[in-house]
Amino acid sequence: MQISAKRTKKSQENSAFRDTKQLVLRILLYVILALLSVLFLFPILWIMISAFKPAGELFAWPPTLLPQNPTITNFSDAMARGDFLQYFGNTTFSTLVATAFTVVINVMSGYVFAKYRFRFQTALFAMVLATLMVPLEVIMIPIFQVIVATNLFNSLWGIIIPAVASPTSVFLVRQYYQTIPDEFMEAARIDGASEFRIFLQVMLPIAKPIIAVLCIISFMWRWNDFLWPMLVIQSRHLYTIQLALANYSGEFNVDWNSLLAMSSISMVPVIVVFVALQKHIIGGMISGGVKG
Image 1 (cartoon, rainbow, N blue to C red):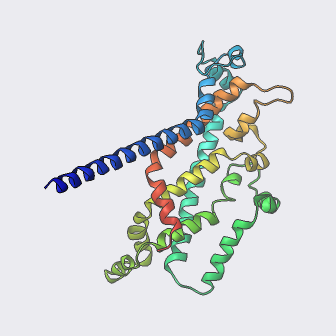
Image 2 (image 1 turned 180 degrees about the vertical axis):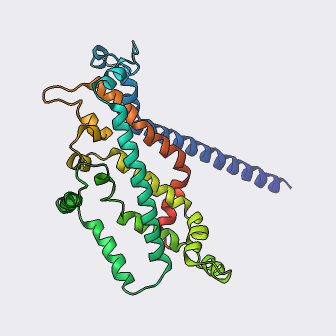
Image 3 (image 1 turned 90 degrees about the vertical axis):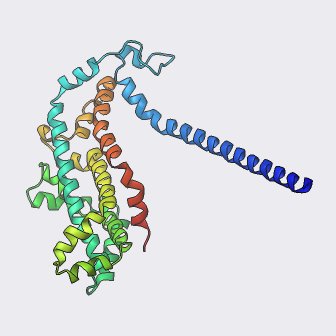
């Protein structure tokens, strides 16, 4: 009896030690993750907080994180320098329309590559993936020539259309749909559904996670794009937000207060979209990167 009691006590002590060790490791992990989060978020927080600092305080030494005399004049001055609402509307329109086209085209393309068998399928998909190895700088001039030839130069459609078909998006959608059993489609065919109805009412709702991933990728890319709008857009009234922000940087000086204020506003839509769709990101990316 005494030996059994000692064994029970020792087992309890070992179990308590393991629980304590796991608790300490978990706390340590949370601390490390919190520090990494602060490290990555600090530049964004600094931009948003500094947008409320007056000019003299922005470059004061020693620097302060929080503004001593908060002001919103940076936002009003930046608005007064240009038609920022027009730039915001241009960016919103081009981003939303481009994202919608991107989702429609790439989801349909990835679905076809994943669920149908046709001649030269492997070769065509290999060509799609091969375009991932071509840098944008290589094809930028040909794309620009096409834009000029089709009268899309100096228009918002000139920055919407060129990149709606994304090989990365096609690959992610194809990999995602390959994880979905074909029995869903076979059951719908037995019930007499057409191929388009099967896609629209059966397979498309299943793809919500990967669609959310495509929305986030496309939205962030289009909203923050600077190089291509700079090449295509000439008229000031068609400027996007990124082109408008570039106007706050002159040849000899930079209006940091206005730049920080408008940068803070421009980050809000991206953050809202990311927060709204973040629950689908991990599942969509994992499902899109694993073949079933």
